[in-house]
Length: 431
Image (cartoon, rainbow, N blue to C red; front, top):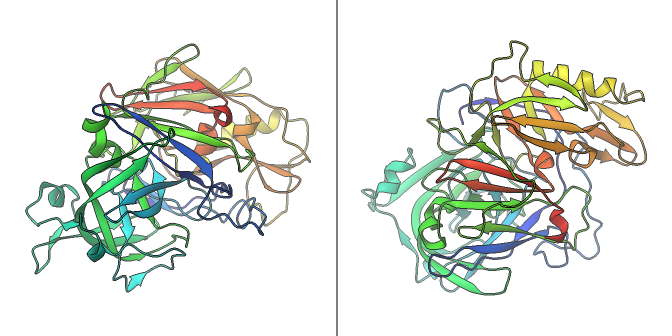
């Protein structure tokens, strides 16, 4: 991802924590996903009521890199209350790390001691000197060159600097470590020599519950790429529960063999390969509001890979002109007046209603006749009681992002060997 732009967007106050993973020899595994506010979560507070939305609809999302300006190949991350947390266990003795699960970046990293330039973290930080399986990566290692910002320390270790679009930054030492994942069935397996960043200087918009970041993008340093030979292929799938799901409900993320999305109702579109291998680019042709098609642009011509899928961004972000035309059609089909003059909502399209809207139904048209249907549970989100806002936002870019609100209640499978992504409607709360 390249040039920075800022967006005003909603934030999801549900964190999901991945509790596990069990590969066998060349076999896949599934992991549980639970709410941050579930009693099974590390960050559960019995006396606290789960937050709804943080600071209203418009102050929620971090800036990120725009991969459509083609000026670089850096990654973006969104923090605060809108991500899914994934639990991995690193080192020996085992140390639990809850990091943001981000399909929009590659590097796996955790805050490490000594950490003189780090953001505040609730839980203890990882001490590499205490782990018998930890080893610094030498300067000559291939991964030191792959990260693009590697430099050599006096100790011949590979120092790294990895930046994000809102000027957040992690700096430290690239290392190899054993990562243990526990499956949905309770088994556990150790994955040795996983490259990760031991971050000694980490700054930016991370919050105290985030102990690092788990990169799940398409690049060679991502967790997906590194474990692919152990789990039966470079592929994974997830099923994200929608906004209103009860905190006790668990869902799953699957890796490798068995993660394929198959059966009735599946639609598939191509993943578009670009210079930046991290984002999962797809081609969006337009969105229908009921039976009224709103094309991606007025010329009718679209560039391949004009959008990418990101589990770390709550709203869907689209070019401003496309948003203006789409929002106008949505407004035209809702038989009530939108809210005006509420500074806490900014310019978002919002309605005062005690329950979610009954419509309209939106159909997202991807290349290859891959059409997915979105209902109001995926397109209207409550930033506060009695208010529901359109969960899409216009941005100053030629492309955009399919966010996790729109991805909820779909089983979504990424096959990075066939370069396809598949969607299947699902009740993710019952999977």
